[in-house]
Image 1: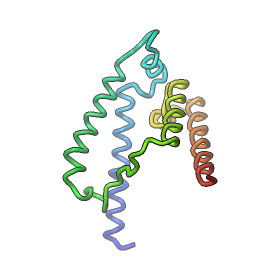
Image 2 (image 1 turned 30 degrees about the vertical axis):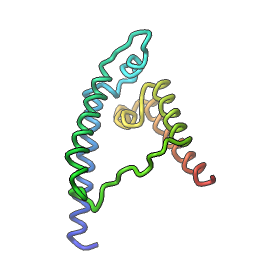
Image 3 (image 1 turned 60 degrees about the horizontal axis):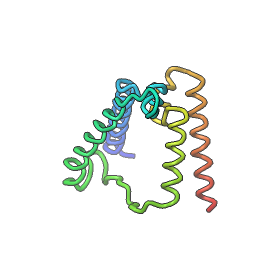
Image 4 (image 1 turned 90 degrees about the horizontal axis):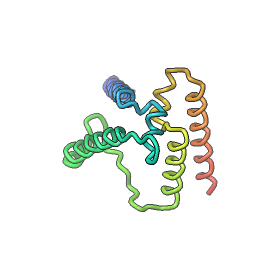
Length: 148
């Protein structure tokens, strides 16, 4: 690997690291790392807390603006050769199954993969167990998809 390619790779890694840290900080500030806060958001007929809907709306707004003004007019991103955008547009059985399992897990536990990873720094056994189970589930799903 030449010096210029190595520098480019390091810059990509640095930007990815900073982006991940900002994302994690956003999850903490929005309290999405608190399973009780999330479960209260999902409890429509009990102690419903609609504040996470504002967090989701803000995230969707930022993403939409970035997509419309950043991705659409450009042929490639600043630090890569192409954008990696979804190509599938069909709602199929695999998508519905995955979305259902994700939603079920989120509703039962009150945490999804991003906040679970952020919560690993607490060394809480529940989050460590969740991430291990999540990784095992991902490996199992990958093996099942390969076998079909």
